[in-house]
Amino acid sequence: MFPEAEAILFDFDGTLIQQSIDFPLMRRVVLEAVRRYGADPEPLERMFSLEVIVRVEAELDAADHSRGQAFAAEARQAILDIELEAAEGARAFPGVPQMLRCLREGNGGRRRLKVGIVTRNCRQAVERVLEGNAMAYDVLLTRDDTPYVKPDPRHLWAALEALGVRGERAVMCGDHPTDVLVGKKVGAGTVGVLPAGAAADHFAEVQPDLVVAVVTEVLRHLDG
Image (cartoon, rainbow, N blue to C red; front, side):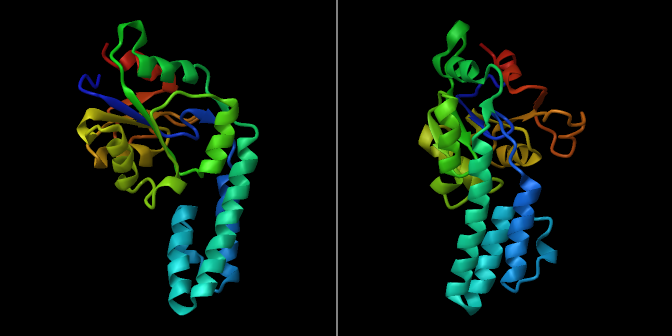
């Protein structure tokens, strides 16, 4: 598959790396901060935590700039603390470092592909994970490296620009339906990686080009 691909982009947490980020806790602490600062959390309950912070900061900022800044700083610190704690026990999925090296070097007669990692995680937590899980890549874009994060396609556009590759010459690979959706937005091929224990229809609504049980299966589906 993907015979014209020149680059492959990967999500990080849940795709390349196993770590237990407590997302329900993250949502709760952010919504608690929303409530303390006098905003209504109910309309925000289905939003991702990062997007909640952006919206509420703007709302508070319109009335009191310092209050908006204080809310955002508090909420972002809470998220950072949760991510850094999770990073301590994180480890690469089996075979991932070898897979990334193989993709970049073209081992086994395969064509070489540029490798990017695009993640909503913060750079500090990602770098902490990478200290114990060395990985080969050409570009890494965390949420601290761009004003726009997935599912905003500009996150992927920035990575592709850094790699010098057009969207239709790339593949996006991730474990969340939004990874597939954002890949389609930039014209890339898409691979859904089933999370452990997920139902077979986990990606049914977004219809990736390929679904794999583990990320390293990507190698055998790429044309040599």
